[in-house]
Image (cartoon, rainbow over all chains, first blue to last red; front, top):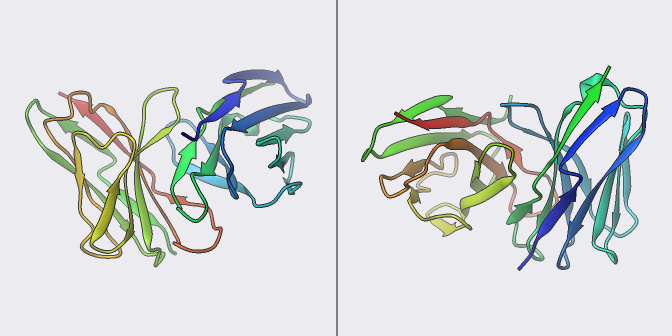
Length: 112
Length: 113
């Protein structure tokens, strides 16, 4: 059974600091996604990672994928308050199934 | 603009009542999904459909039903058999090929009266 675990579950950090969120998954998958959710809102797509060694960057966020370690990271550089949200990773359950399992989410709070 | 529309935004259910949540998309996506989100938790898959007139149970289908009579529409009924329906329900869609991420609606918050 595919399991997706994120850590930490909660993260409180000062503005200007760097930190990394980890997403581990238990079986082989060829697609990994990162989403952002603001409180009470929908999910917004951030990154799609498709191959081993893939790295994507958007502003202060950078995501990477290591398929051999079954690990993805979301790195936050010089955090700002606007990045406060919950971040989810999601993995395709099997090649071409288009059925996804989501991690538990990391709730990030950036303190001014 | 293309997107997913969920309605209503808030819904209240009485004991023993069935309620239906609407989800409509104009993205021309084949696949549609329903997720349940409980406070402080991730998304759990209720049902999904990859093509019209076909749908599959997800991880927590008990107490829920769906239909997919049109490509654009994937309504979810929360039946009286679902004893703990209070949650945030999210509908999503995606193409059935390629690698695009899912697009999500704004959600329906369901509570029990």
